Each structure stands twice: as structure tokens, then as C-alpha cells.
Amino acid sequence: MLKVSSVTRIFGQKAAVDNVSFEIDRAAFVGVIGRSGAGKSTLLRMMNRLTDASSGEISFEGRNVLTLQGAAKRAWQGQCAMIFQQFNLVPRMDVASNVLHGLLNQRSTFATMFNLWSDADITRAMQILDRLGIAEQAPKRAEALSGGQQQRVAIARALMQDPKVILADEPIASLDPMNAQVVMDALRRIHEEDGRMVIANLHTLDTARRYCDRVIGMRDGRVVFDGTPDQLTTGVARDIYGADASFNESATSTAITGPRDAAYADAMLA
Ligand SMILES: Nc1ncnc2c1ncn2[C@@H]1O[C@H](COP(=O)(O)OP(=O)(O)OP(=O)(O)O)[C@@H](O)[C@H]1O
Image (tube, rainbow, N blue to C red; front, side):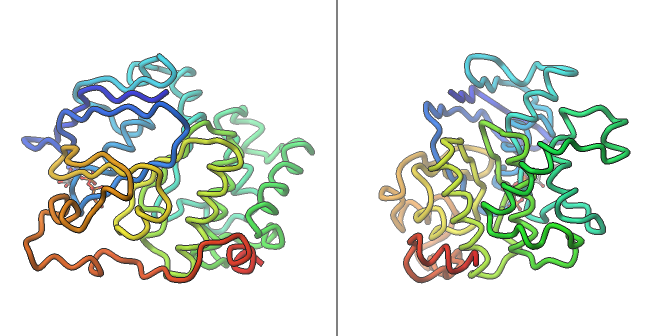
């Protein structure tokens, strides 16, 4: 499905991503972990074509997305929606309009400028907000919402594109543990219910272990681990983070506690 082959990105003298290769053959939930500066964001940004690769290939369903230009590139960016640590919403715009802006790639500039959304688009935006438990926030300005709610608006905006892949760059790094759990549960549910691939950069081990089917560990631009959460032992984690024997897992923990079950998630979303 997604094949990353010998991808490198050089900034100045430094390889931010250094000859990275891996394959994801189904719509899995994949976590990418590693210390700050390991190259996680650069890797995701290359997939989404926000950053150019220096060399290598990234193919999705058999097509190299790194060479796409113009409309084909925009169409690919529509298929792999990106979610950011800082949500990247328009703060003074209402929540529903922020979500509708997920359609930007598919609409003319004219229609977008004048907010000419069809009834079907508006209904869909509201259904997606409802699914994420924040429909009642639709008329509010995005900036009036909590961080966890804003990230769910960003997820709703991504879903508006009906993407095959969701790329999440540190989606919970700005959130408290409770909101982090709500957002991760939402991403996991979207993955399970819709069969969308999720690739999430995560800075905490416990989150990666808990939510991901597969974890890729990066260090200094290279993949140093690629396996299941079970294989991600403390020793392996020490290697990925480049820490010595005093490595303490809790230093990379969001301290999410409590059972991950539907009732709990529903209570949080209510
Ligand atoms: N636009 C840029 N220009 C120059 N250097 C860059 C640029 N973007 C990233 N880098 C460098 O590339 C390396 C990898 O950065 P990247 O942001 O991909 O890492 P990361 O693992 O996502 O870290 P963080 O979690 O801190 O974002 C770092 O050394 C960073 O300074």
C-alpha cells in the first residue's frame, strides 16, 4: 500500500532523514517514535509533500507520490490528510467553517472565498463533528475551544477530505493527559471503523504501545526499530532514545491511565 524506499532529506550538511525504507501493506495504525530531532516530522512532511525529499521514493498504491505536480499533487494531499501539534485551525473562524475548509483542495477559490458550501457539505461536516462529540461547538470560534476540542476539529477537517491516510504530527504533544486520551481514542476509532491508515508521530512510549499496531523507531534520521508494541522493550526504547542505563520510561510518558474502553471514551466525549 505505502512503500518508502531509500528516502533521504538533507538540510545543509545534515541528513534529517537518512536512507529510510519501510513498507506498510495494510491500513494499519503506525506510530513513529524517537527523540526530538530524530527526523519524524520531516518524514511525515515528505509523505504529504510539504517538504521535498532529496532522494528516494514514496509510493502509495503503486504510484510514486514524490514526483506528482499540480492537480495530481493536490489530489494526493487530499488523500493523505495531515494533523498538526498546534491544530492549525483558523482561530477566529467558526468551527463548522474550519471543518468545511477541509474541502479546500476540491473547491474553486471563488466558492471558498465566499463560503459557498452546499447543503450536503454542511450536513456532512455536522455529521463528522457529531461523530467526534463536538457538534454543539459548531457555531463557536475555534479559538474559544479547549486544546482537545480544537484537535478534534482538526481531525474533523481532515475527515472532510475523506482521506485514505491520516498523518498526525505529534497530535497530542500540546494536550493534557485526559485530552490526549480523547484525541488518541478518536484517531484509533476512525482507523478501526473506517479502515483508514494512520501514521502518527508520538513522543511518548506509552501512547505508542497502547494505540499502535506497529511502531517505527527513528534515531538520527534512521530507522532503528520496526516492530510490534510487544517488541518495544525498555532496552529497545533505550536504543531508540539514545539514553544510557539510567533511561527512565516515565520521562517519555504522558501518564495516560485508566481502561481504554468504549464506555470511558464515550464519557469523555460527552
Ligand atoms: N526546514 C529545516 N531547515 C533546516 N533544518 C531542518 C529543517 N527541518 C528540520 N530540520 C532539522 O532536521 C532534523 C530533524 O528534524 P525533525 O523536525 O524532522 O525531527 P523530529 O523528530 O520531528 O523532532 P521534533 O519532535 O522536535 O519535531 C533536526 O536536526 C532539525 O533541526
